[in-house]
Length: 459
Image (cartoon, rainbow, N blue to C red):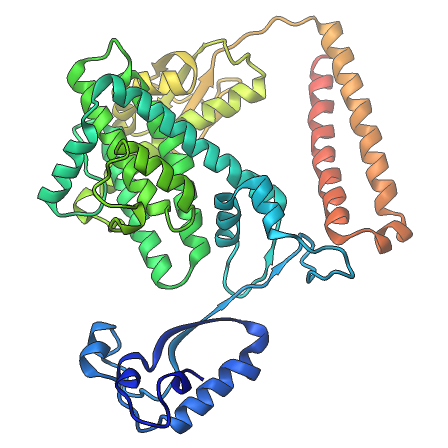
């Protein structure tokens, strides 16, 4: 009982300061045997207790009248189970040694796995494949840091000193940068501050999985995959000096802020890179002592986020169509785009170079009319587009290829249906295996229909 460690049954100063405690962390299987009994004993033996009013106000609990409870909040964490959601036991042979997992995947990846899967009300089905994916995330961060250091050394070696000076003047904990008129800068700073706001809200509500996944999506999906790719031409050796310097400052500022945002979940790689950013002479002994980022509402820009989402939709749609048409990755092809709204047409025109580079197209032609009746065109809510690509094929060879592919699909479908009709197999096989075969069979049937249509179209 917490009160027994603070001098009870005597009234002591320690009780006024430390009772009730703020948070109890526990699992659900001992709620009645431990948590409920602690509450009952506390309410009984400490019913006349009053916490120091100033400390109570400083802790944010001034509105709480009852100080007899042993803790203000209870966080019920998940149990870690195996990938099949079975409780680990030596007799089942499904026990995972955390030291072995750490040795294979790294401490940061292991921590991130547990945080990202810690959804309230569910146990963690620990998956080594997920941990391997988060190890790849750590590698992505490391590679992005190498890209940053390479450009900082060439363009702006004193960038960190300037950023620290700007932080002190502005008195903010978010990323400090000079956004400028470019869409990608306004977008990434808005996204960083919006994600920062969401992460702080998630952490305050103990939704650690939401915080971890938001950081993951921002760092990999938006910062690395989009922003870094967008600013590469501005960091090139032949780029304008002022343009390169601005891009460099924004890149470093965002990276430093993202490291502080990620640090509670992946402390080791963030500490290593943060120390390297200051060349071993950081303003604080550790990144753990640096202020955690808070959103700067002034940098939120909903218009920039909307415009970038439209460009991303166009780029991803073109990439998907290229993959569908099996166009070689090195081959650049022209596209036609019809935008239904003049604002979107102007947006594509202003960012034509970025779209051409990231979608790997030769040129973009903005048409005046819709492409509804154009063979091969694709349509979205905001625009129509057409990839102009002709590939000469040998009809006999293509027919033979499709026949062989169809035979292979038919054979795999038959095998899947045979397994699904086998009662003994269904009774013994794990549920996820059966579900996997059923889903695979459904996917193959769709693929079978598409392949048959292609073969029929060739005559």
